[in-house]
Every structure is written in structure tokens, then in C-alpha cells.
Image 1 (cartoon, rainbow, N blue to C red):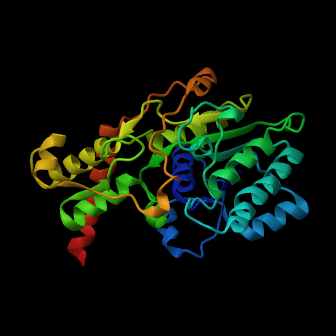
Image 2: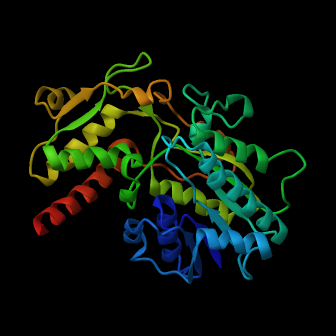
Length: 337
């Protein structure tokens, strides 16, 4: 059996979908379904069992992993970077993760867990090294601390241990995330609702919409997870991004053109979208000033050295495909209501 914590969430549900495509239905889905909206992410999936996340922690702490577990994908976390309750974030992201780590180590079961590119702070460099870690919020700090705890000298388990530092992930099954959903999700909804999209004005020396992030489709993130499942002699912390940063303007234009094609309209250049008022800019909220990554780009040398050789979807193709799927669903839903 395979355990997926956060299995009803964004990446976890996509991971289970991919396992199902491999014929794996012996999946234990661990999550908190208090937010019933997440059920939409898993209604089409086949699993062997569901265990509430708090109950699962009690099981793990008292008697270890359930019998027959061959690998654990730990995707569960409080991923809201705006949460101000640091105690809650540390309990969910750090203490819970430690419980799983100990249980996996005791049973010699591989643990592949979600870290985050947020550990690098505002400016990078974005290479897997302690001296590059400068977390800006409680979420980032919780991820940083667990990475250091898990790979502390002399304490790493004999079984596989992999931390994957996700960069800016977008794609299907993220609607429950609300304000923390990807910019591609928000822009597609904006276009559906108003026929235009909005981005932050310039910051940190970047012109409006020219801030750059390493945007990666969730399908590529899932492939990286499954690569390590298939290669259990590989351990370590690895960046999971495309290695090629794109601008927010790139994302906005990919969304606009994907939606326009569905509406039977011609594709536009950025200048044309601006001239027609389809893309506008607004000031960054005070709550984000000083806590915003204006630039991220994964150094994926370590991931490649481990043997991962899959190509990544670029912004135009990946965001375009996602926006097409999402916009079509929104139109169908709109017609029904």
C-alpha cells in the first residue's frame, strides 16, 4: 500500500490520480475533509482507505505505520503563507512531519515529502544549500526547519528520504485553495467574470508584470514524485521547478489567449492586450510588501544528476492548456446556473 497525506489536496489528489493510472488502487488517503470542497478533487479517484489526518497521527505515534505500507508521500501541510498563527503552522507542518519521519525510519519505508521553494526567501540563490535559506514567513520557516531536521548529520534513516522543494505549481484540482490558488487559476476566473485580468504593479526593480517565477505544471511535479518512487536508492533534497523562470505577463497572456481561442477570437501580443484593456495592473497589498518573491528560478542540477530527465511544460503550453480546461468548465457551469 501507498500512503498519501494531503491526498485530497492539490498535489496529493493529482498524485493519486497518477497512481491510479499506473493501476495502483491500494492507496491510503490521509487528509482533513472538514473543508468538503476538497471532495471534488477525489470523487473520481480509487483508494483503498481514507483516514482522518489527526487519527492517522495518533496511529503513527502509538503503533507506527499500518502493516503493508511500502511508501509514504507526505503532501499534507498548512500551505497558506499568510497565516499569522505560527504555533499552528509549526504543529501541522513540523511536528506532524517529524512523527511521519520517525515512523517511516522505524519501518524502513521510503518517505517522499513536500518541501518548498519558499525556504529561499526573496532573492535566492535557488540552489539546495543551507546558506541559501532565508524564510520570510511561518510556512517557509516550518519547511526549512523540517528539511534541516530530516537531513541532520547522523540522523538520516537507512530507508529512502526525499524532500522536494516545489516552485510555483499550477494545474487541475486546486480550486479549494482559494486565495492561495495559483495565479493562473485566479486570472482565468477573472477573465471569465470580467473579460480582463489584473496583476501587481512593478516591485523590487521589476516593471509591472515582469516579476519572474518558476511556474511548473502539477503534472510535472507528479512525475518528479513518481521518479523517486521508482528509484528508491535516491535520497536528498531536490528543487522541483522547470529551471526557466517566466514573467507574470507571460502567464496573463497565456490565459487571455487560451480564453479568447475558446471564444472564437484571435490571439494577441502583450502590447495588444494592454491596449485593449484586457490586462491591467494594481498596487501590491501592504501585507505582501517585504514578503513577496519577485524572482524565483530553480537550479535543477541536482534533480538532473539524480537521473530525472523528463522535459517540462513551458508557461505558454502548460498555462494555456490549464486555462483552456478551466475556462471551459467555468463556461459549462455558468450555462447550468
